[in-house]
Length: 397
Image 1 (cartoon, rainbow, N blue to C red):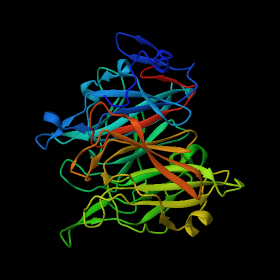
Image 2 (image 1 turned 180 degrees about the vertical axis):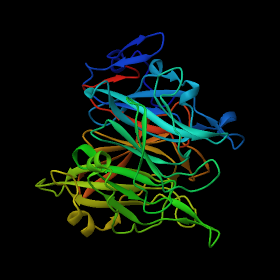
Image 3 (image 1 turned 45 degrees about the horizontal axis):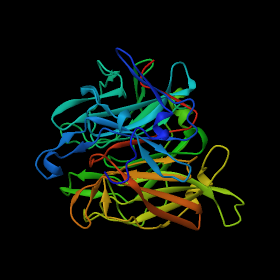
Image 4 (image 1 turned 90 degrees about the vertical axis):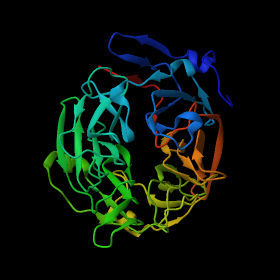
């Protein structure tokens, strides 16, 4: 396979695996570099032709070098338990085990095209899912970690009855609690939700699609919104309103997104956050390679209303291909964004095995590159996460 490094590579030998009767653990305390986790999503059998959708059955691990290159560790791949097989899922890394900041657990939530009901589970935990949600089941939802990384905020999506949702829920897997939270500003699926600032106390929402019953048509959104004080929102139950921000230059849904932290100028005198909206379907439901940036000044508590409300979306460097429904995650202290899998429309329509990365030397110099490594299987809407260096990834407690 092109660009793959075998598990005999010293990069993979740094990791020790212990197989327990119930849990599969990865202990990476000695790892100085980050790991890219690619999991779940969907693929097509029979060389990925348009015959039948099936859920991906594997989790793949990639070692990230200091220059952003990826090294695949095939012996570290793992078959997914049936409770981890979702269609159009979402997920995030959460702290577990009493708030131990070095213990990170990949959590995925979602539903399935072929049966109703949503669930959340720790990746790698066999047996029953951690939590079967009592509220709406959700396809194409978006989620982020909140409450200092101790809870997952799951938002919007499409129900099993094909109803678009504006409801959201906060999920605490340690206590197995599910709490309704503030509604989205409109019903949305295929949208992006990204944390801002240190600790994710604020977040930005952009894009997505919804169905208008009055006009009997699907609408693709260009609008974006800011929500602040997410810790206070959860703890006090106080629901403040979403702050409307500048609309994107293009309507887009099922796009790729992330937040980069880069030098604000050539002299590196300041740090800014760049909200990235890449690819997806435009308002005509055509795949696009368009990329947009929303540049925000960083404060101690993240991007405030004054910074965000004055910011304007602008064009960024285009993707190497027309791309929708890819997975993404940031690495290198949010200096680089990885984009993996998805559905490409160039030069032909097919699922993608490619991995791209977006890197910014400063706010004036950002560029895409294609990694030599490819995914072992082409995946539609995979969940992609980056495990930070010097952290312990444990799939169970």
